[in-house]
Length: 519
Image (tube, rainbow, N blue to C red; front, side, top):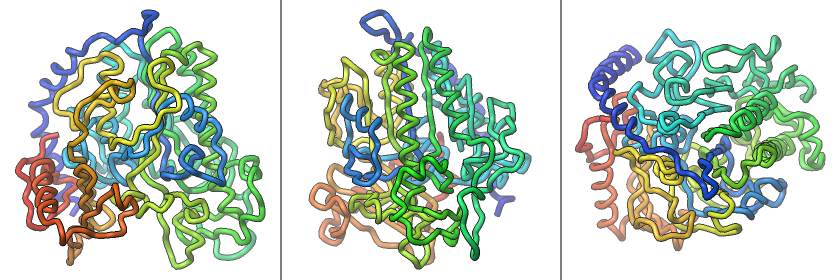
């Protein structure tokens, strides 16, 4: 299988080479950065949580976990109620975010380890190509300082998907998503330099069937989030006089559950009457509910650090701040409903607020995510936006917000008119998700209707399902048999919008894409 994958990969990259020069020429025509009323360029801080559920913030109805910094951010800006991630898992969602192309067109559709196709790499995920068009490259070519701090997952160090090769001047954090399962890893990366962190790291996966589960057994000397937040604060301070784009990809609250004891102790001991022993993957923990709450509380503290750093640097009024999550909350696993994957008990926290599905699913619970956006003086404080939008929209939005030329061939629409109270383009456009994992799935949102098809890579693919999200946001009533015209419309959208991708194939019975794969 991997021999075929490697040969397909080689052919694919060869086909892309003639287009690389054209891409560079198009991007080199970017306009200069838009300035504020004081003649100062607009900065951008884009913060991305990892596996944060739809209802896990106070401003989205969370009752058990306080998130004061994010709630304050929501009160100062605009909160979105129908925003969707690019995909239901990490790497493809981030690919959509940074390239502005939905997963029907995106280079990365799933979580594949790079070494399956490129054996020279011992860590990292399948890389973006040299031709990939990223929002970071647009900012870099416009003279912005560009930084990516946190979790990457779009190509190993030294590959075409290396963050330095994709427009970021600075990268600090986890290049590899699998390494990021541990909050006490052996190393992080600063650009191409491997930074040793723990001589005795804590692995991200280790079950304990018997004996006392002790928190002190799950800690080491250097806690990665502390190091990454220090880098983020330094980046803001160092570039206070420069326009900058900071992509801050937190690792919370992705399992394994590794928060410091002081964070765990913020929450009641009565929540946990039995330990999690790692039976559903990742690490054991003596107080799993408190630990999960602690990770979200720590995430909120990180956001507070960023906001204080902007205040201290005098940058608050000219920095566009965005906060969202890469996909829905961690999914259940095993026979014990108390312990989902990694020990997460999403039902205890009402993490989806009734939305169907979790991470790994193209139902609402896997894709709908919190989104908060702030820019004092331009975005109305305390406002709420209920119009559908998704990650593909951010590339054109950031270009318009900063006055940079928007590249061609993006799938998203700029949200800037909505954010600033002006009439924008029609939102009556389809949204597309193509996901080869968890059995193979596709979804198409068409106005208030959403068509879903599951198990596409199994011997018995599922039938089409159809939901009216306005009347039935929890996707409980399948209307497919009563609306064949909408199913036909969804199929036509997929024929037009899904390109063949030999690296991440998704067979859709009865449909053949009109277009060969061109990223």
